[in-house]
Length: 167
Image (cartoon, rainbow, N blue to C red; front, side, top):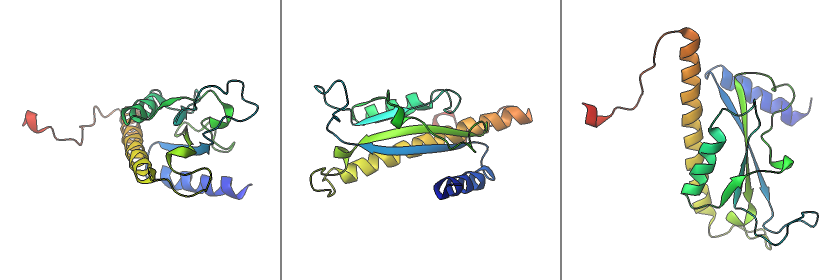
């Protein structure tokens, strides 16, 4: 087994002990300049792309990620490229409690591609990604709780959010 796959599987198994649902978020980067084999080189590349795969990504999760990135004024779109796809190694595929989402970022968001140094926009990119990861975590937790509740047949789980206006 490839060491990366083995480490990923260990992390997933550990997370499954504490959570009914685990999301493997694959983050990649790409150049701001189109590659020579790309058909359309006239248009700028998006700042981020989000990819999902039927059966691997919970319904609506890719949409949540896209809407969130657009709310931060990032030019984001769905990925139409295979290398940006949601991904799981073979030993984790087919497990109903393990899901995947792909996120690809244009390098100009966080670095100067000419020098390889951090860009001035790096702190902002970190904040956006931190917020996005937090939103995804909350949604995966919500979906996991609903699945667990459904499996137990115990009725609706109350929201952990106290709505002060309803007190």
